[in-house]
Image (cartoon, rainbow, N blue to C red; front, side):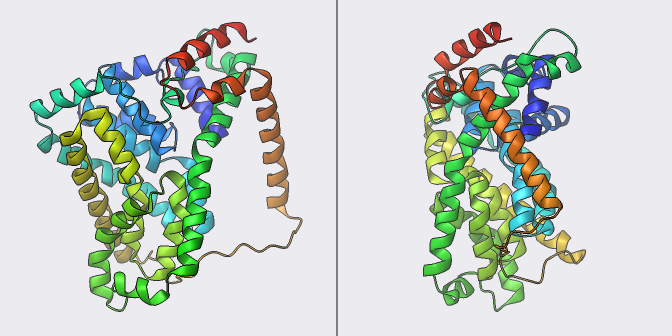
Length: 371
């Protein structure tokens, strides 16, 4: 997460991640614009609520609607920390599937939106968006911690750059810790209380053909009713995989963090009921479609894991390279948290859930004062 914070801080300083500038580089739904939107999304937040708030903000500033949806999808499905958690809990095949399936899903979504979003619906969505109804994490989405002046290197080693990185780092963790804890609790409850026979029956695990057919269709539905989003759905994905869902079903489930019921309700507030329902249907279709493609490709290449047991972390403490890396990571985290606390971070943290106006104003003032 700190790596992405450095990237966004520096890129924002050049104008590429600044929200006002981003709307200028996302003027239409062309292939080039979609590629830029996906790249910027991958360097953005992994929190689903922040992602959809950012997308609405960009749309209000004049960015193309389809491009903002691509940005939104990339923000939650192509971020580094999601791949790391997938690799640790489920294996490298799932991390690879996420980063291969994500672009496929974005392509499918763009094609569907081009056909379905008529001028009338776009006008309806923009009119509703201009009302500025708050969803969640509006303050975090509106915070502008961009740096300007000087070279990239000078900004990277400056006190202001250090401050911006620390603020990004802490607030990113603050925005997703609830989802991670919630995901672990839901996954633990389902693993303990739901019998294996239920999962086997639901996913038709005994039939190798039909299980691949129903998996990508059922996976997103489980995500919708589980209410878990962002990286917090990875533990539950591990439970589903051990329960017998197909490989493509796991991928579709992981993608479905953007159609959980609380987020669909925010779409209603942002873009209106008709557009929200349309987005739900199109998102579901793109997620399931990407699941089918990944299932087929990984099956042909022989990359689908055969072991369905969840990863069990050994509890004994050993001294090896991971111990050294953990110590270094804790040290870096401690320094960043210390800087965050010393430069007005707690005040910004309290504004994360606000409408964003005070957060944006206070943030600009702070960066002029911090040295």
